[in-house]
Image (cartoon, rainbow, N blue to C red; front, side):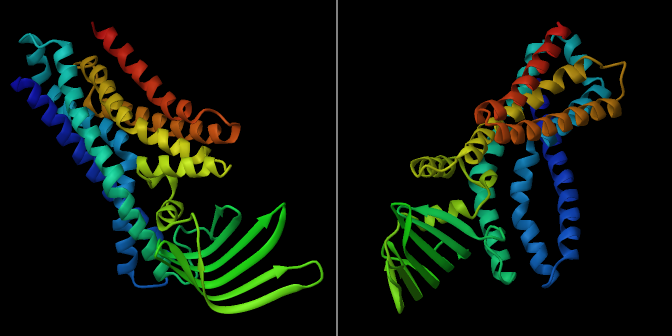
Length: 349
């Protein structure tokens, strides 16, 4: 039991150190890139980069776990601790179990990071960007936000926060005809509806177009701040519950939900990918204890991590283009890596 705790602790420490190092490099490069185009003070850029850090950490978690575990187990191998453990009777199953125990803890950390830390941090980052960049949209899309609110199609130019909208255009469509257009400078969510200000209303008629202007208008809508909170964030940064809710909203409105379903299954696969990356480290280290140096082991691990990352991105994009199953696209790379890990373990027996 003590040996298993020692192995698990070493793996977790190595994974966390690798995560910090890689994340620091990514933050430095991202800060340099953003600072080159910054219009405001560099402190604004730094704050935005820091707020995006949890999402970046979540995205690279499986790869840094693989690298860190290789470094940690490689250190044990270089000090001949793994050889001594095997000589003392520690089975391959016991070592693998210790590594996967660390993987369960790390996978739990990845889930917590992706569900409860990264989404609110990225939302704050995008709100900050919208407030500091003139004319920006909260999610950074030049065309604003389009949402379907039966029988309307609503376009929102700017979302400073989910309860405030600016540059609102609502097109009411009945029998394939636009029967009313409402434009408002801004709106605020209050008492279960949007209170629009500086409103212009246009109603096309058979003979002429009726125009009117009013100071305020209460607009009942199924588009709530909770819906906007999902819309202004990228699918990859949403927690599972919000993704599921928004998928139901899109499918209920007859809209394409493939991108969000893919993001949902990617989140499901993330902890499995973390465990799988750790499984691969065992045959990499134990299969070459004497013949290969630690640098070569880490290099092979980095290649495997890059191949996994690129394969996942390639399959995900191909799935969206060719209409493949989102679950298949998200889980297939992890399944292939798991099969390789099991094959490597069987060769050690």
